[in-house]
Length: 126
Image 1 (cartoon, rainbow, N blue to C red):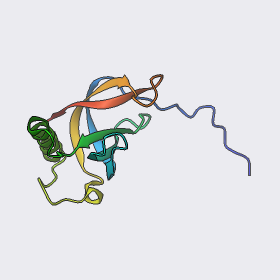
Image 2: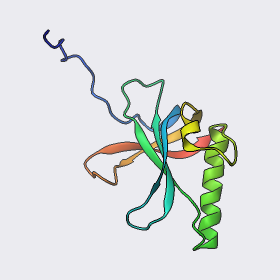
Image 3: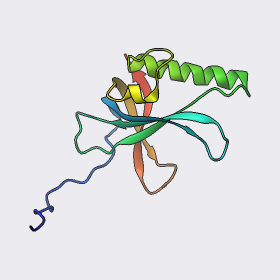
């Protein structure tokens, strides 16, 4: 069987800056190779924009080294949980899949590939 005509398949890319519904399609706890700090990595989609790229957002966990930084990280994690209507504790990353939130997105250079533009969460919207 021959491949179908793929010439009309649109390329994907980041959406323009604005407010969108985002959905968690994967959530994993990881450790930074550089710092050794633990973090939560969310892989997110924009359900209403089928030609948009999926993108990752990192939420660093408090590590006890800097009290102010820990509070900032806790606040950011709390805002994320509230936006996605997730419990404020005791939830496993695998339980986050499918949760949706409204967020204002921005377009930035990918820190892994400066030639690529990606979406990132600017702020959550109620």
